Length: 321
Image 1 (tube, one colour):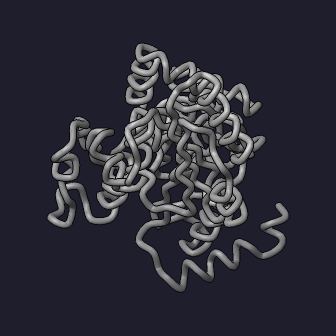
Image 2 (cartoon, one colour):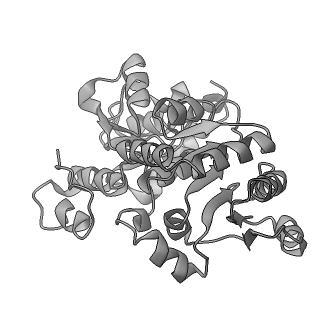
Image 3 (cartoon, rainbow, N blue to C red):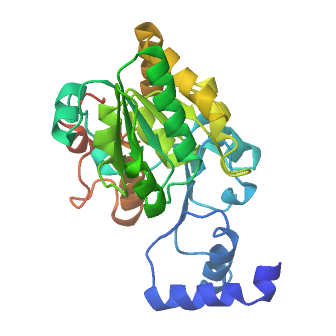
């Protein structure tokens, strides 16, 4: 109501009239009702431009993601398919493909040995610790706890610490002296997350949806260290219930869990299989494929083939609906 009274619909309409889109895609929970209202006014009382929503939450979602008037709503998980149904969307509107991820995760990775060598890592058991692009989430305490636990158990341990844009944390970690038998590779913002996930045995991270689905595509067990109240809260039970991770708040508990898993190959294999069982690495392409078909038609020569995208990896090609 506030947004409408503030003239936001009119601003959406001005933008839409300027660019004259053939189709509109929303990727934010607050951009369903207002742009569709603008499109309706542009159409003289009837929306004539197709409208799709790509939900980018994972285990739970704000109700504003789901508007019964959309043509298609792309959801990443069974949990959110149920949420969309609860909000009144019909099955014909809902497409469960997964969360869009970068194309580097579409292909089957090389072996850990080869990947570690290419990244300059050694062959020790490896924990990958990330805190998002800004390097938040108590990374320093977690990394110290992992180093201490590895030393205490006598397990040669390699920790890859991704600090993102947090230069101060990066510099502090690089200045530290680590115990014998512990190697810490300190990185800033990286673009090779797919490779580092392929090289790791365990991931420690906050409960961001993108990182979780990328890890599942790599069959990587996860220890979740924190979550943002509201939007990320549902991601914790998603990981735990699907059997490929755990939630631990305290750094020492995180470290114990990581080391318990590393010394138990059967447990690690079970966690990895469970991660791969929920992986949907081709979601990005499938969503784009459906959107493209809405514009030019499924049989158009402009439409690439999904099996060509999937070629060269071990993931089965998903049939185009």
